[in-house]
Image (cartoon, rainbow, N blue to C red; front, top):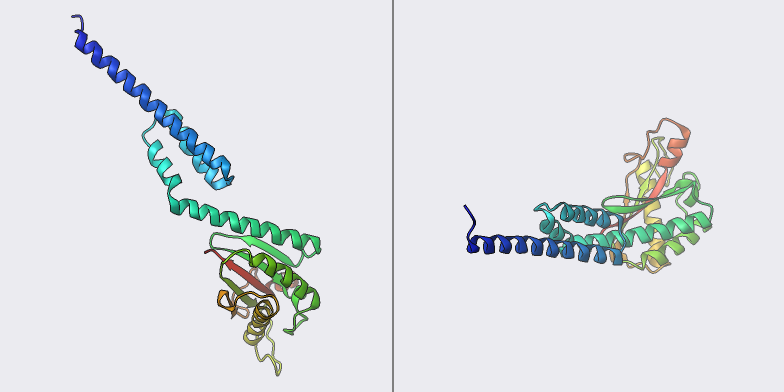
Length: 230
């Protein structure tokens, strides 16, 4: 039986609506890509790419993925990641220019950016007085830290070899004093606001590596300057 004119009109209308919906979806995906390119970020680009692929495949998840990418909270997180990546790059550049790569690691993790500084770069063995070269590094570091409002935590760490002196009866006292010395220098000499920074001493109880070789123990004797995410 031949279709009626009304059936033909309905079929044509359905086809037009499908074409229009596909066009709107592709335009939305293109907008997301253009927005992403304006602020290059690998994680965000990966999410945008996934949403764009979904749009091209015609699945129903496109609009939901786009909304998730454009949510303010997600964008804020990406901006904060960009800031810490930039800080990491600046600190690593200065470390390399001073030939201190052996003594300083700059590690970006999920919740913070940590500058691991071995004992030999900052202190003499068993002492808590900051070396002159370390003060130069801290001044340069403070100029970077002033660019962001993030809170800072300075942690003192030791290896598992006990210490017992009149000034430092145990590794607890040594680790706390070293962290405190760094905090005081950053606040009193470098202008970091005291409310942004704190000092902690962990002694031997948070090693980065097993204390089973001389090199591992050397790397465990350290001060960590931890830049927390906002």
